[in-house]
Image 1 (cartoon, rainbow, N blue to C red):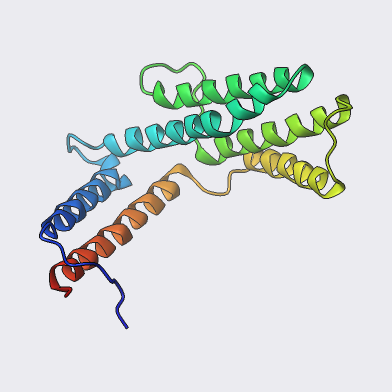
Image 2: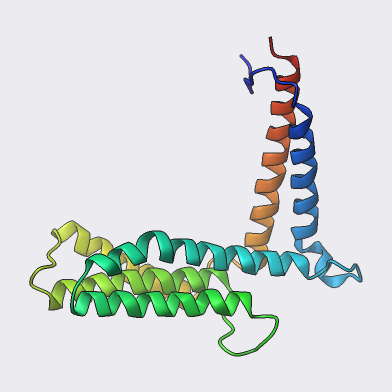
Length: 189
């Protein structure tokens, strides 16, 4: 049984370069450098904040814009409020090293705010609008989102350093897989 099955290619060396870049990114992002004097000691936190901002913007563009554009009245106003709050959170992640205004950097708190907003938005829309009706199980899910969001805001389960280590471990795993894929691409028939 082969772990990795790749087609033979003359560009197998590109996988090794990609693996090297992934390993380099993992080393730079690792939070162990924060207490040292290396020039890239804050890069990991900067990259991490940029990833959180990117995830928020991705969620806003792919999910919330579609929801806001198809809604009308109160539902649309609530969706726009949700978009504005999440956009401000994304902006605070990007500008956290330049200003201290609206500085929320813990990923669990940001996730909690996003979950709480989504759940509260749907609960309010369901209770105010006659055109928006959900089955009971969806209302329970929205109530759970509000509850989980509140819990994550009040008591974050995972710290930002633990999230950074998770990203480093993911990059290391991807690096190993890319090396194996490159070896398989070189040897395949």
